[in-house]
Every structure is written in structure tokens, then in C-alpha cells.
Length: 323
Ligand code: NAD
Image (tube, rainbow, N blue to C red; front, side, top):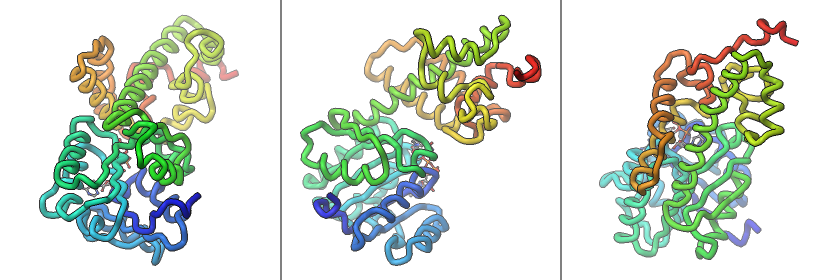
């Protein structure tokens, strides 16, 4: 399959917690004669990946420089302002050189308005270029394992779908075309809103049950058997030591940082307002994640630390003799 898609000259911009392992998959799995030009504002991360894949991964001096070398570019930066800068900076952005016929894929989780503004700019200046939003889900562990999901901002009949599916498939598992421009982002934000709300509700439900005298393991069985069943209660249980592999059981050290949940939740609430969607849980959810993200006991930890933020009992095992 790989030979049918010509990704000989690829660019990758943004080599952070997600971008670095995504790039590694491409460097290991693309055909032998493919080369990847990379750029990050942190030069050390560029030097590190170039040293890890000598001859295969090559150093770019700027986003523009990368765009001048390649036919396809993936971007993975934190926020809308960074995406704007990477694409639209008049001196060093991707669009400051001729990008006619190039394929551009932004995997960052940003607001839909910025994504559409970048897409419109490209459509106006370089009509033969193609820009897609393609945010991901599955976290750093998923990026390392190559199991992240991609939510593509295109329809099932998009002429580039095969190429997008092949390329993203090298880095991930499920690839879902969401219907059209910016709809990958809309899907991702709506998913994270739901996931964030469930984590708060799950924390509160466990807490009220435990304070009433229930063992959290019994509660987990009840939720799993009942209508409350969901993956946050099951596999990402906010209460420590109910599910051994949940981030909470490891002190919330690994997982999806609460600041990122705060960012995505805020973007989702903005999106809901913009499209006129009634959103009764939005403001309270946002205030909760805002508080947790700024709480020294929670900052930098997995977002399900919201259980701690809301005052949930963490040391329940010693209080119930741990059996
Ligand atoms: P990160 O902060 O670890 O990495 C971002 C990288 O972008 C950094 O290396 C930074 O130096 C670089 N960067 C910033 N501005 C740049 C610019 N103008 N030009 C070039 N490079 C620039 O962030 P991350 O965790 O890798 O997340 C990236 C995106 O993926 C975010 O939008 C995030 O919401 C999303 N995401 C993250 C996770 C996760 O679990 N970390 C999961 C799913 C989606």
C-alpha cells in the first residue's frame, strides 16, 4: 500500500509530547526513500530527532524553510495562535512561500474559527493546495504506541482521503472522516467536552456514594452493570486504586494534563456559544477545570485529578482496611 502514496518529501512542525512520537512512527514506517524535514521553535528538539534518525530526518530552519523542501506538511502545535504563526507569519510561515499543490494537515487541537481562517487564506492564495484539520485523541501513550485516533476534517468522498488515511494510519489506529472542513475539530472538542463532564460527574457520584458508606469498588461494579456505564468510570476511574491502570492509581502522573482539558473544554464552550447550542453544564465545568488547572495540588496531573480538586477521599483503602 505504501508505494501507492508518494510521501517522499514530508515536513513535520511541532515536536512536543505528541509530535515527537508521531514523527518517530513516520520515520520508522515510511518507505526507505522518504525524507522528513522538521522544525520546532525549540531547536534542541529538532537536533535530537535529527540525531535519532540520521539522513532520514532533516533540520528545517523555519516553517517556511520546511515548506520549501516538501510536498506534504503535518503540524502539531499547542494553540490557535501557534497555528496562525506557523502558517501565516509573513516572514517565516508556511504560506510565505509558494505552497501550490501541497498537502497540509494540522493535527493541533484548536478553535474551529482559526482553522477555517487558515484554510480560507490558503484557498484564496494557493487554490491548488489542500489544508485539513485532523486533531487526534488517545494521549501521549497512544501517540507512542501508534494507537491514536484521527478525526479528519473532510468527507468520505474527499479526493485526498486515501492519502490522508495512509499517512495518519502510520501514526494511529482509527481514522474517522468527520464530514468537512473544521468538523474534525468540532468532533474532537465535542468529545472532550463530554469526557470532561463525565469525569466531573463520575467524581461527584463516587464521592456521594463513598461518603454514604459504599466501597468504591462496589460502586464501580454498579456503574458498569447499570445505565451509568462509561469508559471514565471503567478505565480512567478518578478514584485511586479502583482500576489499577487508571491514571489516578499512579498519582495521576500519566495521562491528559488538566491544563489541556481546561483548554479544550474552553474551546468547546466557545464553540457551543458560537453555534447557538444550549450548554447548561459548560460554565460550571469550565470553572471547575480552570480551578483545578490553577491548583498546585492538581496542575500538570491527569485531568481526572478533578476528583481530588472536588475533595474526594483518596486514602479510602486504609480507612476501609484496604481489603
Ligand atoms: P507540547 O507543548 O508538548 O508540544 C508542542 C510543540 O510545539 C512544542 O515542542 C513547541 O516548542 C512547538 N511549537 C510551539 N509553537 C511553535 C511554532 N510557532 N513553530 C514551531 N513549533 C512550535 O504539546 P502536545 O502535548 O504535543 O500537544 C500538541 C497539540 O495536541 C495540542 O493542541 C494538544 O491539545 C493536542 N493534544 C494533546 C494530547 C496530549 O495528551 N498531550 C492529546 C491529544 C491532543
